[in-house]
Image (cartoon, rainbow, N blue to C red; front, top):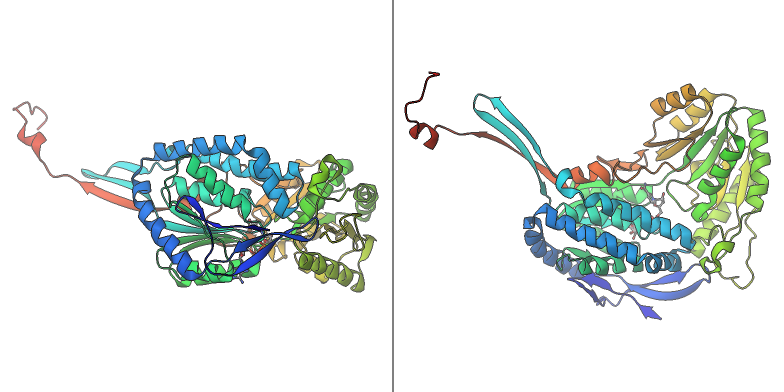
Length: 499
Ligand code: NAD
């Protein structure tokens, strides 16, 4: 069995704690590797080395730092197949989906290639008599990224690329369930010219996370994961005086208006609800048809599409639409939630609980499930299921549908399908959710915008990647400057006609 490592000071380094956790192949249920869980001593040493490396890195001019990103981007492209395979092997998602995972991270690296423009400050000439003001953005020092299992390439890249190109050093603590992609990305960054110690990948669990939150050298924490942990990390980081942005869970709704193109809406729900086994923070997990007729038509369109979904291991290639969920515990939790939905009175139109795949009986596969007549008091509505389960909440008009979303605790993403511009515009304007799709099911903003939810889906200020990331990973210094008369007056040779 493979023993994974940390990545410290430019090389793979074995763990010394003697503590490990298992990394599964979710398709077979077998343990394929063990990953070391660092001690606080190992972490603190990595942080101290990063602090030393950061000084010279911050003094390297932004254009040179951007050139490292250019090379890094080229290397990611060159190693696309290998990185996608690493993602799929530990996560279980299909290869095309894993390539999307790498690609959406790469696009953030591409924006970081333009760092010199994004790091330019502000200037005001003659803000007072003979007084100029300017504001510069400077690196924070050593920062930390703590990432979830569900995007093993994209989210570590969202963290490392902006933080590093701004002149910081980063301690990255990837999910212990899918650590290999982060380790490989760190190697590629070194190959791209990043000085040793500027990116340290420290594997671990709560012990390392708490060590990060309590370490005085760490200036900022960027977290992505479930809401309870996001809220905990935000609180502890803030108490310790750190800048923190913590992105949490989601329950994303899609309104289907009576005038929507029903085939397109159904296709969108299939992709956004069941893709990656529903393990996306931007997955649509609640369909909200407006009007009974719309709801009946939608269910009629969804049923054959859900029944046609092919579930299997990524190694089966094009024969598979989505793979297993991440752990046996996850599968059990999803199945329990489905059972609770039935018990609480929802109609389980398609039941994925008994799904089993020949040859992969021990894999963590869940068949697709579809619910109709879900109501907001049910656990399947209230909880983030994070599995291939789509719930339908029927509403009688647009205001009722909008109110459902507005009163939900989460506010990551949402979408509306309609042919009416006025309705779409009203929805985008009024809804209290951070990312909105209009006839677009998964509105993850492109990399030159920024990503972030509202309500219980995010804690802290500023979003991930794009212009916000450049603000999060730098601090502002504002200079007010006045120069008393000097050499210029002394050098005047009596040509002072304007006196
Ligand atoms: P998770 O919260 O279990 O783990 C995330 C990270 O926190 C991991 O690195 C983990 O090691 C660490 N962690 C776990 N328990 C901890 C504890 N008690 N104390 C300190 N650290 C701890 O999340 P996950 O299961 O890996 O990821 C799925 C969740 O992430 C879902 O809720 C999903 O919606 C959310 N997510 C959100 C976004 C977003 O941008 N809003 C993006 C992707 C995923």
